Length: 188
Image (cartoon, rainbow, N blue to C red; front, top):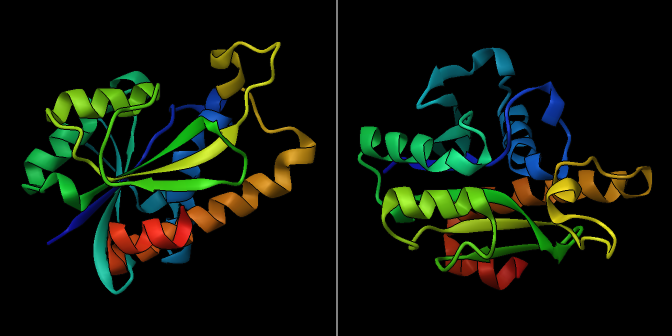
């Protein structure tokens, strides 16, 4: 059974390397490891898709280009087309409630304020969708959360952010190989 890895973010250069786009960055890292390039991506499901070999399996990587708050449209189309069970989908998204460099797997549950994840839950009609939350926080006291997530990492955070993206890509590989329970034990 094919697995779908969805990285959440916003399309366009304006949003490149922002905190909100760590989901895209994790998929970029997975694609790079497989020897792929952005040139191999194809337009599909209101986004970009690429196939990759991860953990000895063929998986589909999906970068929704519907903007964060409408990510569910893209994911629902891909799930319907490939007839995927929701348990074979992993959503990789930012979480400003988690400190920078922390990652957390969950097999299901609420969106916890992440609007892209909330739209996926709405579009699929279930919260029974595995997710990997990548910490980008905390939001400083004087910041608006929306402005914070759309901002870039400070120079002092750059190394931690890069290492977290690599670690999250390792975690996705482990999810493909071993499943959600093993990954919760290892990474949470």
